[in-house]
Image 1 (cartoon, each protein chain N blue to C red):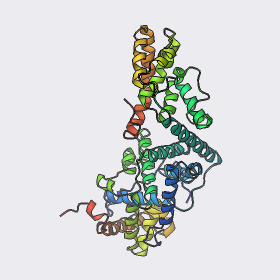
Image 2: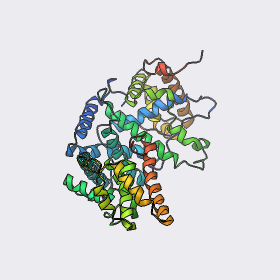
Image 3: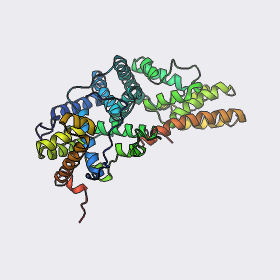
Image 4: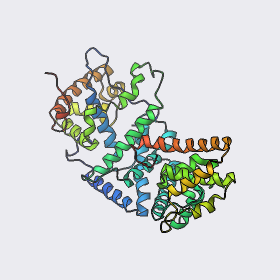
Length: 217
Length: 211
């Protein structure tokens, strides 16, 4: 049978006076059985070369993300880096090319200013396993650095309360808050815009995955 | 399909998918490629069979597989029963399709059929009480019930609902009867199937019958 992809699936209620509608649960069972049987057939359905290419790219991206996640789990404390800087470090630790993952998220290359592409980078960060709090903290660091009012990286390097574990995200947030207290209204507005972008990324997935990415704070 | 043994024919495949999932969990590189090769085409075909345009299906299928991997890695699937992983995968894909339909709901009737306004509902009626049953369990119950029908009933159920999902016109052409006659036969076959399923041990506890 030629399954026309634009053909609507048949709806089963009858309008003939000699027939009677079937209960929804029966239609549900029949439809699900049909779908599941096709889904689990031994032979996979035919596909286009373009689609197979897309699948291969997705597999490479998934593998890269897996390596980046594993690298992240080996990181102690919170590295006070920009988001792009941190992701680059993770790739180095994982001895992996970032290209497949960047391509998957539609990022041509890591931007020199992470805040210019906060949404796409946040999606990448989220898939590496960073929480909303961590992702936003990295972006705040870069934003503070761009604002130029304080030598943020120096402050962060000195800010560790526990040298053994380096800077914690709490230490970092405290230092950032002090720096940000000197921001202009325009800078605050820009920072809030970045926060809203990142939060939207995490909240959209939060809803879908029933709290899978539980780091959204 | 209907004449296969009542024992679930995909046991071997089900075990293979369980093994593939376990290999994914230990981050075996090759498993990632196999996983996409295995599931992407099936999910894409499933999406298209339920009305998603090819372009959308080809974009969403790999994304769905990425999501499945992510959920697997986060421990959202537990290996409780043999062959359960592909059933779980199917439900994740089904949910993604349902979400897609929520944002692509048709606003105009198609072919003058009023019920297309509730097409999403008809695609996914999912009676709440059936959420507790896995798709392979429902499929097995349907197979077993259909196997108890007469050959004629089996054929029309297969043509209308299972293998082919043909229109009554198409069924009529195949069987050499009118579309109206096909509709009547199908309705009666469904009625008989309904009774078989009502008595099935998996289905019976889930449906309430009128006293």
